[in-house]
Length: 156
Image (cartoon, rainbow, N blue to C red; front, side, top):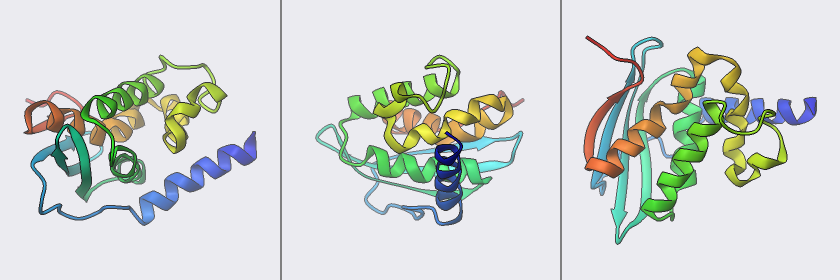
């Protein structure tokens, strides 16, 4: 099991150091900004949605390794998915990090999340859950309204 956990940690570090789809998406027709004032993470998520399918996804911004890795992996995971499937993926991902999923974040029940299951261990660190879910909340906002801003905590 420790080998699996190490592989998962390495996946997060790899995406944190070399994020995929880190750029402005010129053809984007959906966009949302996210901010985590507790950690300082800020990002802009871009989506190109056509005929109910996420054709492309990218992001820009700065943040901790977990926030960056999560945004990177989100952009890979939602490409080619229908809007409904992307929303379902958000719900499953959020449930995993909120502790609503299986007790062991590395159990087979999270296999449906694929590589995203690497974030299961983050739920042991409540302050880091906000880092991991920031891009996902931005995606949800972009899918719902087309454009917007989200924060992981209430700001005055």
